Length: 309
Image 1 (spheres, rainbow, N blue to C red):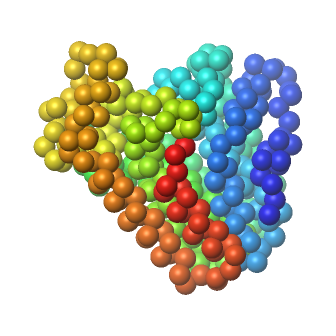
Image 2 (cartoon, one colour; image 1 turned 90 degrees about the horizontal axis):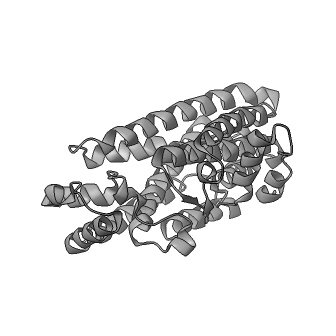
């Protein structure tokens, strides 16, 4: 299969003005799991398609994903991403915003290289995904100031913010690989469930992960009063008042909230939901062609549900 990292490394960011393009190169050089482009390539090959045909879309998805991270880090005031200072810390907020904007443009430039006969639908799917990610991000922001958020609302928010990017990578890959409509939808549904499991695992790592392997500062969600799966589970168990913001240091808040989570065993509840979503994802693959690529998707779903970074 095509080496995604090698292909990303071929993208040229040595352009002028350096203040616009250097942060893009810095962001993409930080690595990452490259899950989205890998999913697009796997989906195409699963149905016997040519991975060269889907490569432009795969790269576009990865560049677009990293664009969202640049802006997300500004909104969350995150200091570290993938073990390195975030762009707005290394440069400044204006640079992060503008370089992020350019990354979105670069993603569409890459997408335009998809074979012409497949471009129109690919573009529609990509645009729908982009809109839904913005909708999910807005819900995430809204939830910070709401105390009545429910777990179903949260699941819809992360479906939009996280799952649709994975699901669209798979659906575009399947479409370019000549899967029929039903098969494309099964791949999309697989991605939705994988994304839900992925985000809940991310919530858990923010509380219980190791910063050295996680690549981001631990406790950011707690500091920002984000309504994560763990927070909402604790609230549903009667701890809503205890979870409220107080006049205390970040360290004291983190210690206090983790104590509540431990007492109410919310980590175990999150692990149960991750297992449920992973099983639902794998079930989506049952009626699809069974080959090495199907097995790779199963293995990837299990790996993402059990990751430490």
